[in-house]
Each structure stands twice: as C-alpha cells, then as structure tokens.
Amino acid sequence: MKILVIRTDRIGDLIASTPVFESIKKAYPDSHLAAMVSPYTKELLKNNPFVDEVIVYEGEGLHKEFKGLLKLAKILREKRFDVAITLFSNFRLGLLVYTAGIPERIAPATKIAQIFYNRRVLQKRSQSLKHEADYNLDLLKTLGVERTVRTVGLWTDRESEEAANRYIVAEGLSKASEENKLIGIHPGSGGSAGNWRPERYAELADRLISDYGYTVLLTGSVKEAELLSAVMDTMRDKPSVYLSNNILDFAAILNKLSVFVSSSTGPMHMAAARKVPTVSLFSPVRACTPVRWGPIGNKQRVLLPDVPQCDRCIRERCEYYDCMERITIESVVQAVNEMVDKY
Image (cartoon, rainbow, N blue to C red; front, side):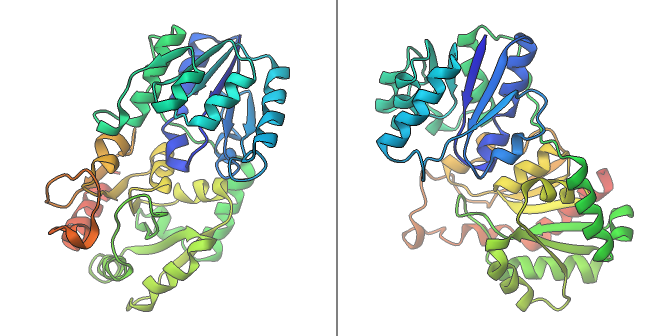
C-alpha cells in the first residue's frame, strides 16, 4: 500500500504530526509512506525512520498557480498512491489529491475543501478540545489504524551533531552545558501567538545570569537577528547568541541546553521532540491554548496569564490587552529552576 500524508504548514504543525508516521508504519510495516510538506519544514523529516519519501509542496511558489498544481497532481498520479491523508486541509490541497486520482482521500470535514474527499472526519478543531497530535491521529481510524503512538520525533545526523559541538566549543559553552547551567531563551514567535516584549526577555536573562549563575544562549533564526539585538541592547550581561539557518543544526544545539524558554512557537515543539525540558509562555486565545498546542513528551512547565480565555485577540479594545506581561519574570525563573532540578 502506498500512503501519502500531507501537512504543509509550519514547524510546530509538522512536529505534532510525526506520531502519524510512526503509527501508520507500525500498523502497516510494508507500506510505502510519503510525506508532503513545505520547503521550510522538509529537513525535519530528513532522518525520520518512518518516512520513506518526502515531497515538497510549494504553496507560495511553484504550486501556487493552477498550472503548477496540475503538474504536481500529474506527478502524484504517476506515483500511484492508494491513500492520501490531508491532516489539515484547504481548497488547493483538496483539489490536488482529487485531481491526482488517489482512490482513498481522508481529511477533516473542513468547509468547502471537504468536497474533494471521500472519507471525511468531523473534528471542529477550532474548539481546541484536544491536542493537535490527537486530532491528527483520529484521522487514522478511517484507515483502520486503531492503536496509535503519541510520540513526537525529530532526528538529527552526524553532520548536525558535529556542527553543534563545534559551536559550543567555539563559544566556550561546554562547561555550562555539561554542568546543566546552559539556558536557551528564544524571544521570537513568528507571530503565531502572543509573546513577551524583548525587554522582558532581557530582564529574564539578566536574572538567570546574575542571581543563579546560569549561562544564557539567545536563539533565533537569521531573520530574527534584529529581535535578538533588541534583547541584548537592554541587558546588563551579554549572552551568547545562536542564529540558525539550518533546522537540523538547531535541533542538535537544543540538546546542549538544560532548559529552553520560549513562547508557543515551532522551536518549542522541536525542543520537546528532542526531549529538552521547556518553559513555555502561552496566550489565553482559544486557538493557541496549550491543550491543543502544548509540548509533548518532555519535562515541561506551561505558563499562562491569569485572565479569562478569549476566542480571539482584539488588541487594545481588550481590558487584558497586556495579558502576556502578566506572566511574571519570577514565575519563569521559578519554572526554570524546577526544570533544572528535575533534569
């Protein structure tokens, strides 16, 4: 049996989808399992032992126009997939698998896109009543997979491990890493959820350094260099900085950390998949709730502001507009110390 699993959005979405690959392979060990993902996330599956093939979907590039979509549909048709499972669908993805002539097409019953699927599962994900990983796994019941594995995974390789080792040595971070004193702070969020201001991350870093003797490593993508500079500009002590341009190298760096502090963002899910302890700042917006998007499978602390849950952020019109600032620095420091003691 040839199975195509489609998840074309962001890092956290794909990490939360990795239990699907393992569950399918354990149920159908002789199957050929392909994953269709975005160009940005494809490296996350490079070493995944449960994925036989990775197909890139360029939704904002080559496959954005109808002509490009038809070319991709032709490629999929030639691969003769028996089943397509679209974990999070939209109109174009539905049209793609339908045009590709894949006989069994499974997806959530999502608005108009559901017309392209012959096996639809009513989920109402917008209510955020369970974790994204569980919503994904629920779709496998239609495929006859009843016993699933709820384990997220992210595998590096020797090159990435060696690159991480070189960086740690070059930055003089080896001792801090070995002594469980290296704290990663990731100020960026990609705009997917509420977050602290850079000044708050700066104050946190200063507290961890001056009061507890930790070594702080600020992390971010190369596109977030300006944000990290803004954090450092208001710090008393200057931390080390890791600007990532390679997902697998960053994944290897994560395992050098004692604790990873961030908002709800893709790198948080990467850290969880690498079994790195996390302290995560979450927004009270329903779509961003940790019930649906919390880290899985690692030691963790999730912090929420003490305000009512809301359906969407209305910014300055909300009496709790500064809600993320209500997560105190002291509570994050305490969570970091708890994670270090448990590590």
